[in-house]
Image (cartoon, rainbow, N blue to C red):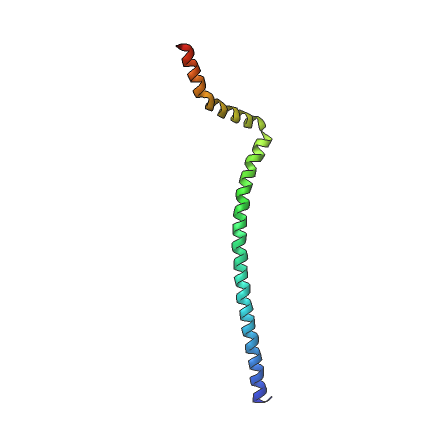
Length: 90
């Protein structure tokens, strides 16, 4: 093998090494982007699962939901009821 042939082979290997390094850097960058997107998606899914747990609870126990709604309505109407009672007392 002549010196020129050896230099040519070394040049080819150097180019191949640089190409591999570039590809590795791009793959590493893409992997980081995928990781960030996955974390973001998992956060949204977790929040949706919490909301779904509330829906499942009230689907399983609808009487509790009805009682809660009636309780809220009663609290809202309490001022009106108190005013009506005061009117009757006078």
